[in-house]
Length: 461
Image (tube, rainbow, N blue to C red):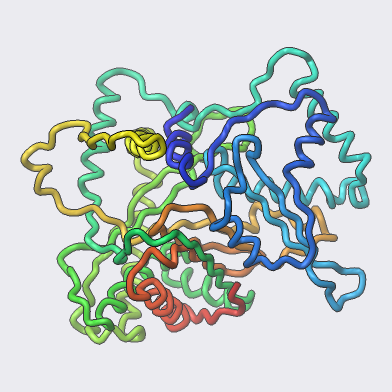
């Protein structure tokens, strides 16, 4: 098991956070269909909010014998003749997949059941034949076949030689020391975790305006979101009369898709390939716009969006990216192992082991600045590049949302484009933060989005 997989597996055991399990190959095509049938739920007229709440806050849906699950809901009849509306929920273990793999799977699902190559919808008999051919190709020879892809760390360009490995570790430590962040959303302790997901969608016309404005300033929507998140945090603090640490920057962490950097492989695309880096922006307002009015902050907003772009580009193009990704995975794995020991002690009623640092801090390390992140901000990019709707014209995609079982006090923000519409997806623990701070910050962020980017939401899910 690779470090990335361990970093998701070990924390998942207590409450199904992220979820991680094992896999046993089917013994025959009939066995594959039987097992798949147990991982499918067909239902009618159950709202998306209810399904999402059950998955995020209810009993653990995935488990040792359930690596994935498909919920297919037929919604109330539409007014259009010969049309029906369905909601498709695909639940997968995070250790084995990420956003890119999940969206590729969904596109394959629609292509399989409604693709144009056959000239008509796929029948049950055709699907059974497809399963037979797939099973025969993978396991029919009688000899064991490795179908699970190798850990992402094994597919990163190797670092050979003790000197290069040592240089990589030194580079990682030096870069980590530059990650300074002194702002966090105030959290509560002891409350039961209750996750909520809010999805904001802008119509196609508004989305074109948003993309055009960003392009005119030489940035992307993702770059702009970093600036908006930071400025909205500063404004929210000032509006509440909170003393702001303007001497420390606002840090946000984000994921990077490592697939473009991996060595070629003929294995499945179904694996997690995420690296992480941080973006840091100032927490102060310029003297010309101390009022915090969004109009007065326009030039500051675009300047900081370009700063976020430059930081993101440096991280993505850095010659030590592969080494940093491998070291980050190792660090996250070590942290997960430490928490796993505590989880085991709690479960079995054993004394809580003391936390011991991996090495004694030096004098300089004892006085290092804080490295706290305000939130995680991920970008799923332009999903229209993954979904080939022309291949299944009988299916019309119109909305999308998502969520993951994160720990108490968690907060994640996703941004991207789906069906030519810009989307924002906020997920957080409503019981994990103090004084309605998240709600106030989110309201301010959306106000800034409308004022600076011309984006007034067309739908809220």
